[in-house]
Length: 553
Image (tube, rainbow, N blue to C red; front, side, top):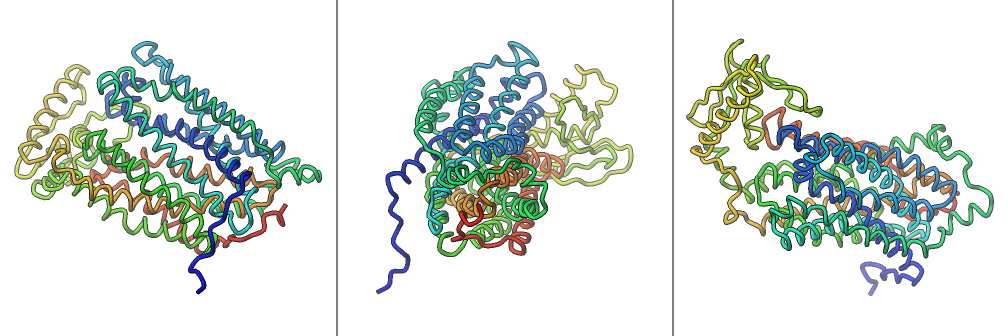
């Protein structure tokens, strides 16, 4: 009888070393990068305490995003070097930069110690991390792909795809371990620094391993023949034939992959903690468990892409995510904080205000003031993560919040001194909190009502979507571009997609939620991007599985 699937590939000792060395170093780099995202709320208090709590959290997210903003520039810098001098030396350099910046973050004084110099230093380290990561992924993925047989490239590069998730998992586990070891109060004060500081030991191991690697055979052969590109940036982006592929790779692959990935692994954590008020340790454990369950599927879908193609798996992941995000996140609310869901149904909140006084509540600079009665009311509700609807009132009227059958009158802070405005806001917030409590709105999720089993299942489903879009994508990107400009060409669309479309996802989704008053409204961002990628990808992206990449030197 013919077996349903061909025999599994038996890795040689050299192949195992290549995959292990590349993956281990990349796990470490992603660990460094994710530490910041996992500790965003603590970072906000340590480095942005000069502004209010809500603005400080937005600042922390923006500082997190700063590392993503510069990733395409890192892709250009290190991609060019990788195509000119080699893959090995470039991703050895990137890990040194990444590890050093992470270690320094653990030493930085807080805002209370050195004022504005603290957030400036933090953002500077984030930028160095982002630049290094912009060169890391392309180097590792290409290095492994150029060692792989043509018909096994999906499973080879899938090991690299696991590294981002394993890095996140590693950061979560170390954070949980430190929280348990020193206690929550000490961790909030100084213990959060330890995960950053221990990265110096991981850096030493990773550099030692990468030092033993040899150059990829494809690049070594091309260099020996004198066929390396003297101007990879010009060849990649100055010639329409290649630039067209770069654009298609961005909008038809990496943009959708990025939003699915960051929704499944980052936004869910923020949603559980910030919106549903689930205990941080419980939320982190659930995310970590879903990552453990889901990680093998990177390999499964990578191997499957060698058999049925990369494109159908990635496109299916984008489509499934776009179609199911809203029901899945509503189910997460149901199983994580049923009291909140019940309160939303029995006592809906309505803000009645003059629409001309209602502004977009996104304040990235921290200096804009929202003094109108509508803005004060909506800001208080947003901080409390309460769903609300907006109803127009006559011009000039003072905003009011209706919570079920109760009416809470707002106030206008225009013209008030800072002290008077703060006092009135504090009083108003207490009244609103008491009214919400009386209507059944919980201040935090009841641990006894958290259905961990169903939550884990839902988080696992979201993780499956991540593995579908991410598992095969490295092989597809490598196969799209010729060897002489591969590092430069594939790195830019990957890091624009993941650095910009993905990196801005938490900040964008929270801004959309604050704008609309609907805790699910931010999901429109990943849904629309994933659908756009599905349409463009289905129409214009070619299937590359089994392609001979050496033929395109």
